[in-house]
Image (cartoon, rainbow, N blue to C red):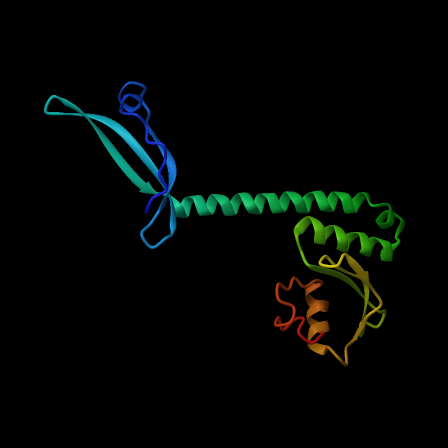
Amino acid sequence: ADQIRPKVPKLAAIMDDGLGGFETRHRTKDGRLRDVVITFRQVEHEGRSLISAVWRDVTDQKTREREHAARHERLHRHGELIREFGLSRSGVDGDIRTFAREITERLSRRLGIARVSVWLFDDSGTELECLDLYESANDRHTSGMRLTEDQCRYELATLKSSRYVDAGDALNDPRTAGY
């Protein structure tokens, strides 16, 4: 079965009902799936009614559409989270430690992030304190860890200039590897 076999339209549906085509997926000989559009058109040739079928690969277009939809959904979730954070009682009251705890867990759960943390610079800007680290794998909050400029000069400089770090691989990302 080199193809994913769509339900093939009946000839009468094309000829009489004006079925113009359909979208389906095709598996190539090397196993890849391709999105395709197959269009039909009735043509007359030497007094006979024939059907012209054209197959068009739309995989790249469909990939872009799926990526766009995923970005849209992610932005929608981000917007919802921002609204929730703006209405959080702990945030409104200035209870930064409770607010950090709420933020880390919500971000982790809603965005599917394994570890989320919120850190606060001291007044001198030479030390960071972890207000909350949430790890989804064991549903655990921890806090109180400290990073000093002596230990992590490059990483703290990055945080000062960027304000946040989104590291997919924290152990190998140079912005986070030191801590």
